[in-house]
Length: 195
Image (tube, rainbow, N blue to C red; front, side, top):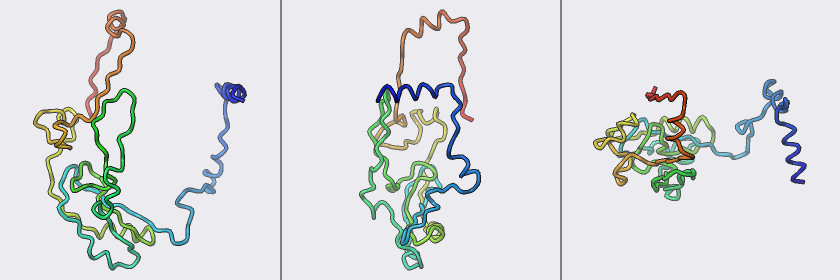
């Protein structure tokens, strides 16, 4: 059976394989997750940070609690099980600082668009309107958007307890690069600035 699978794969290499799914999408008959309607399904929308780095001093959601179609507005304090819910990605050869990202911000936002609160509503339109009805008070913190400046000793820290903004480092080496470069006909060294 394994041999059959290997043989069928090798027969695909270099062959023109026709895609089977394109016609339904090109003719408007494709179905997406949002096309499925379930009775009594709830919809969510996220209140997201407008700052790259700030303390969240207050989330005002009081007037939404009595709004028609709004089931709830929740922050991390309401859903503590979401604290540290996202583990760092396992990447081979990467030395990564121990950190678990919360699904909602924990009193400090560290990037523009970080989710702060979630609005749960009876339909997607009310959820979106609910997001617009949440007021977040911020105390902006100094931020840097330049990776080189972020590594400087005086850079504002994203995670102060780390003492640095360096989250991960990768060191890969194979063979003898010094000998390979010394014997190369042409060596090009370039520094690519951030766009």
